[in-house]
Length: 113
Image 1 (cartoon, helix red, strand yellow):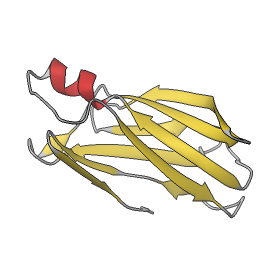
Image 2 (cartoon, helix red, strand yellow):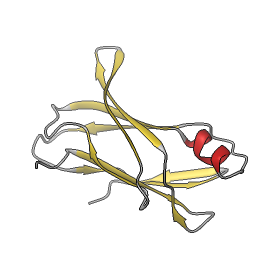
Image 3 (tube, helix red, strand yellow):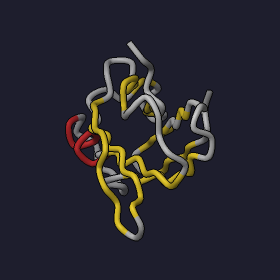
């Protein structure tokens, strides 16, 4: 089985554990519009390992995380009902791991390995 070009995981930093059951969508920019090309849900370890195709063309991509539904499911209010991360793919053969560190009132990200 081939590996996905894009992977992600979410850590709930307030709870100190992975965020399981979060819906994640991957979009590609087509001109001025965005087109959904993949979707997944985080597993028990907070990871989506098979998000998207094996290869992506150079360009802009966006990960959309349904954080509001996650927090509602654990009975926690949140300021961010969704998190959208836009990034650029510039090397067709590179792997892109885009983690999300999440709490009810803040988030951060980085290019992982």
